[in-house]
Length: 159
Image 1 (cartoon, one colour):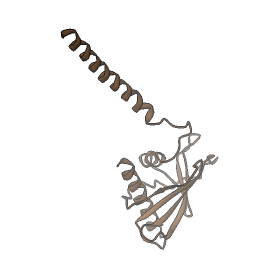
Image 2 (cartoon, rainbow, N blue to C red):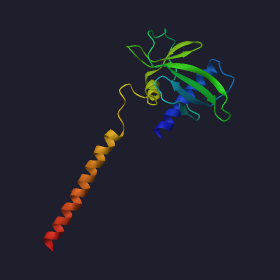
Image 3 (cartoon, rainbow, N blue to C red):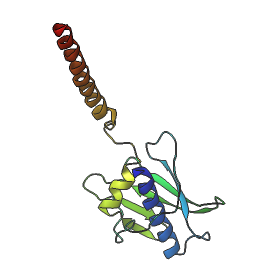
Image 4 (cartoon, rainbow, N blue to C red):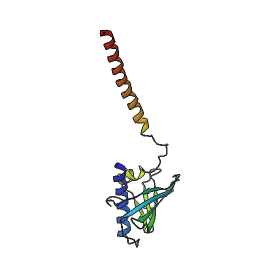
């Protein structure tokens, strides 16, 4: 459900930007396709979303450019017509994350950037959720197993 909310937020922000700068003939809501950068295959995000917080103020071009630059394409939900494309520059070398559009370069607000980057692979390979789940499950099984085993030993001693 959390990913759905994130996807909805990204879509609404993207749609609002395209509609506010009148760069797309298609009217929202939009679906997104994130490609390029270090992605093995494109990521599709669908659904109508809230547009708050996607674009910050216009900034200077973040030079030098990062190694991984992503392309974010917009598609109209329903008929799939293209609505435009922008580039996403991840934060790097102390420079902020940025959107490159045909109208200029815009900062990506911190909260939105955290949401957006959750869809992208991390530079360190990331930490899988299993890293946290498996030890907890193993501990739970040990506690339950120990409790059942101890109970069985106590009942044998009474008989």
